[in-house]
Length: 217
Image (tube, rainbow, N blue to C red):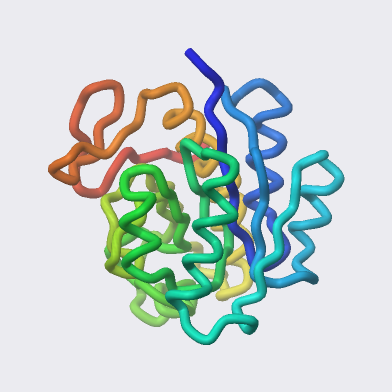
């Protein structure tokens, strides 16, 4: 099996990028990060990429007159690396349909909630305000619906009576750093895929709509 090529898109600190870099270094993931792209030149994740010897790309969205022109510039830069997988790791831009369709079935995002609950922002406070007993994070395939693509892996965790939005965020981040490398590993080893019908398959078995449940130890 040939080693898969990955391009990671970031806008900020890149903690999930670092988790994937570390998983590759440890031999967990049978793949390599070909490049890291950011829409912000000062994103700390670019420094993480530099330290790991990974090429960095900066494409400032403010330099383009429309989302479509920005996304086309990204496609041109990304495709130069012929990636098998695109990983959105804190990339804070809404992608256009043309970009999403171009990478259909080979683009992941991670979201800090148990989707389909709490799409969008402020997920931790919303879970607390709703009185939920559990919260968590989700890796999903990206579609044109924001935070609405088929679910691959979820990590549920109990909400403690003493939890604040900040403490919950920290615990969810820890879970993200476990399930994102796991999903990337499965994809790179050709265990995880999205069928033409839009069903997520793991080891040839179609997953339930909530995806694979990764239970915290």
